[in-house]
Length: 68
Image 1: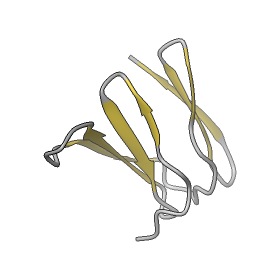
Image 2: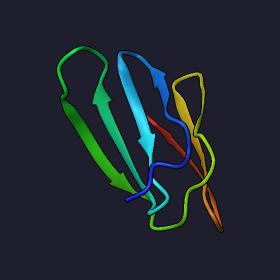
Image 3: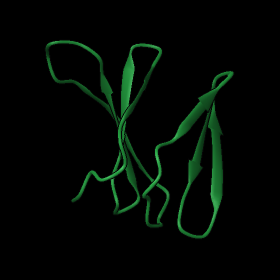
């Protein structure tokens, strides 16, 4: 697993995209706590963009928008 794209933080969480297409959400703080792991199934090289409660993810072939 390679974490080439830089992480992004919002709402008490840190989101770490991997080149493999996985995005790991961890709780911000001194103690490690994995909140979620999700896959978009494509190569990721760009930092996700955050706006108004949405996360925009540019993958190799698609752009994904994820919200609550």
